[in-house]
Length: 187
Image (cartoon, rainbow, N blue to C red; front, side, top):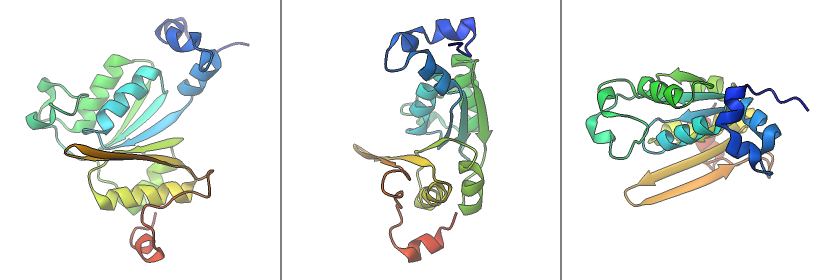
């Protein structure tokens, strides 16, 4: 079987390739995968780093915020010299420095129902680490409608939650539980 990996990629991902659970086929699947990360802050930052390091071929980042010095103690993707930059630009620089084999697409915007629908449909998987309910509902509704798996995380102080919503496992899950709530956040 011919694997669509360059010599650099074989060397970079050799530890994955040696794992029977991943192997060359799994690494090629990662290379061909795409993930949309909503939020480039405390939750999205480490997610994006690990996706890039693992070799996910196309990573989309959505955030409309500017990096502040006070972000750096918890948003590990960003560095001091990037303070004042848009988070998506800081993130793109770091991710492509970590792994030049991947494509990083940035979206300097706050998602709403329409933009969430447009972006979610372009990716295989969505990781939501945003910090507001309107965006969280819009992303969830867009994933349900597009049949995409959503990994949703939230953190506040010393507490957090993580959930995976899969449309193939019971028809998908909707964070906004009532039809009235879904109508307020259509995707």
